[in-house]
Length: 359
Image (tube, rainbow, N blue to C red; front, side, top):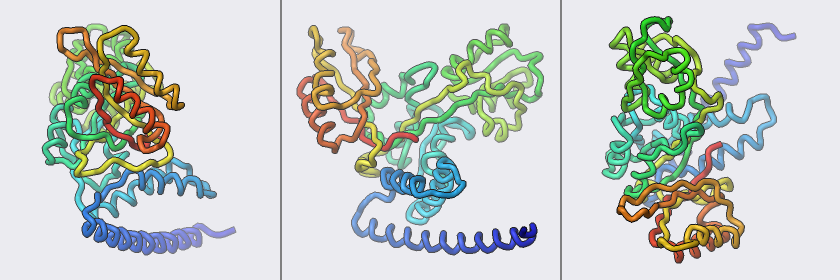
């Protein structure tokens, strides 16, 4: 049996080999970046990175888990990508939000984060070009759609180029570990709704204060001894707060879906990755059977609809926009055929994007 010192020496040797290989990879990435600059093509290709990670996971025969491979290679690609160009990503702030966490999971940590007070500002920063990408919450498994984001998607010139499905655990944070004396619980409205049963049972007399983000709630709790916040462990660390109660969300499997948006000139639509989603917004003439007719092209061409949400058009005529997610990519023949037929049936049709689905 090898001694501890022998094993450590072998690990040190492997680490040096890894460092040399990573530097070689960075050099190759730099050469790729130079070709992209000459061609005028985008630095970031989400479908390419998704394919690389999926290929490595499929080829893996060692003890590393698929999620370990995804995390490690996301960081490697992020570091290499940053050598080509610094990427600015707009997220809901301040530091410590789940939106920030989604950005880090999608892009890796080698990026420049732009913190925004609202999702409106995330969309504005992306549309204006001050951020290359924006990250916005669109759907929660407990509370349903994030309606403000859906409304903003209707009017933005940006496309959806990716998504992250994040397990969201809300902790009760405050300056002490006790539940005694809490007068206010501050959090984003979605978080308050996702924890309402626990709050009603354990803090029935505390005011529930809606703020712009959970991290903003944590910042306020750090300033007010009798306040608490609903947020994640990252916010607790950033603002120096204790976790007074762990994972108090009503749904143990609470998840939030975040979409990554970008202008077409910043990042063109991803090519098919093999596991894709196509998102669109449509409206139909106000006549009997119009919504039913939307489903006919999908069935005809064998395309599955994975999401269907409605939002009022605000015309005063009881008209609606429908937000639809389809399984597959717009470049696939069956999806393209279904979309072409759908377009002829719609009074309004907007393709938000086709992009790799979240693992």
